[in-house]
Length: 296
Ligand code: HEM
Ligand SMILES: *[C@@H]1O[C@H](CO)[C@@H](O)[C@H](O)[C@H]1NC(C)=O
Ligand SMILES: *[C@@H]1O[C@H](CO)[C@@H](O)[C@H](O)[C@H]1NC(C)=O
Ligand SMILES: *[C@@H]1O[C@H](CO)[C@@H](O)[C@H](O)[C@H]1NC(C)=O
Ligand SMILES: *[C@@H]1O[C@H](CO)[C@@H](O)[C@H](O)[C@H]1NC(C)=O
Ligand SMILES: *[C@@H]1O[C@H](CO)[C@@H](O)[C@H](O)[C@H]1NC(C)=O
Image (cartoon, rainbow, N blue to C red):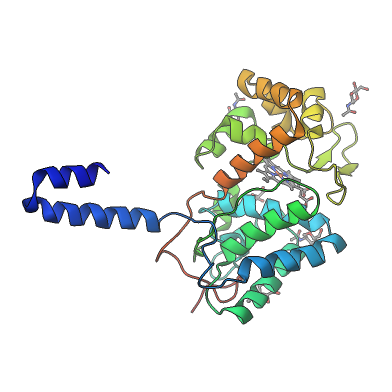
């Protein structure tokens, strides 16, 4: 807006300035994700993903957790650009880092990609497929909905060492968690909200016992995570770390005093924010033909 005013007040001599401002404005709007980015280029794409998720997730509800975690891991390394899906080539890829996203998760995305390539070849990015499949599968298992604007492009680089340095470790202290989230433009509120999803919990009294909260049950995605954190029960060090800071501790208390709907609303905002981390748009990156390899 100030661009236009400036140029108008300065008159015709500033025509070049106006053109420059317009170009900058267009460039800026291209760089944004948008809801229904594929509405014209592949109108059925989001429906294809949703239908496939709705058909297959009930038979494998634990995949919902795998997929949202895959989206998180994708976004935290080089932005949400599908780099988490790349196979190792000359260098070891993120995929080969210890956090194991399971072969099933990768297969699931590959099968979606095959359907979308059959519908509209070379249009829908692997990064968007992860983002949409994660959201749809959490919704299908009774969890919250969040908006997934699309238009992410796929990256061409995946490095194991970067996964090691960007993904928060389960033994991370508060400073480590805060820093790794801040590196992604996420704040302490996002840290608390995004920690509150379904997760496998290890009881420190019995490290052989893995208590998996069943993502298939309707009540999985509730506030019980925060209750457990406050009771210091069955969690990772990174979870207890949220109590060592007064801001995050009081946020947890507030979330527990609020409604499940309030948590869902806040969680949705943080998920949308996470889904925008360092996205590649416009002519950046590429639309991979196969999610596991860059185009040749
Ligand atoms: C705050 C920092 C985080 C740490 C330290 C962390 C750490 C972990 C660890 C160690 C596991 C167990 C993996 C296993 O059982 O093999 C796990 C599981 C999980 N994490 Fe996180 N995580 C964090 C944030 C997130 C975020 C932001 C999300 C998604 C929004 C997420 C989603 C999940 C899910 C869904 C699982 C269960 C995976 C499954 O059962 O397949 N985590 N996390
Ligand atoms: C990853 O997890 C799956 C399923 O739990 C397991 O079959 C596979 O061997 C694991 N892969 C690695 C590299 O740990
Ligand atoms: C990544 O971390 C794992 C253990 O968390 C370690 O075994 C591996 O050597 C690390 N790799 C790199 C390249 O830092
Ligand atoms: C947190 O962990 C980091 C990395 O392990 C360490 O360098 C730092 O001293 C720790 N901070 C606190 C306050 O314990
Ligand atoms: C572990 O054991 C201690 C002592 O019996 C108990 O106070 C604590 O609540 C237990 N923690 C968990 C996670 O069950
Ligand atoms: C990627 O790696 C997996 C596991 O090693 C393999 O099964 C798959 O065929 C590879 N995908 C491509 C496109 O090379």
